[in-house]
Length: 184
Image (cartoon, rainbow, N blue to C red; front, side, top):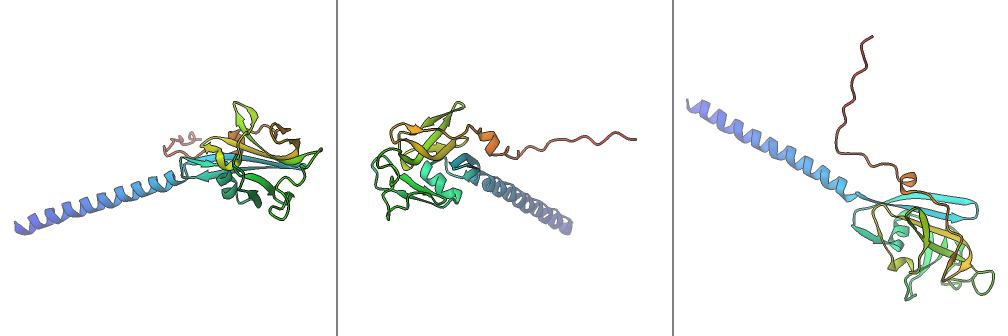
């Protein structure tokens, strides 16, 4: 009788421990997924090339500068501007700050520089702020284009590319049922 009691007691403990292990695995998988739950679309245009990239991050928001940093693109910036960081060069297009002025090709007319844009309701809006002073959230699309314009109005915006075109749909946590094929 005592042996039967010990068996049930240890069997219940094993079930409890197994249950805790399963719950901890499920919880940790959820945390890993939460770490990459935010995404921003990035469009960069120079010359005839249009680069589209989806940038993932775990924070609730990042600055436009941090999005560029996480994109892995080769760029440099003048961080001393009170309006926020001015992007001088992306992928060998632009000015090599600090050797050159960040707006080295904008000393008169024509004025070429990297203009910063935000997709808002299907249309691009020129950014009045530098990239380090603009907060970006999940689902936003940020745009950069090298070309002629004016520093207070920009120039031609990037081509309109939606978030869905840049960032593929996220996988869902909900399993979906796929019925078996009908018998032949």
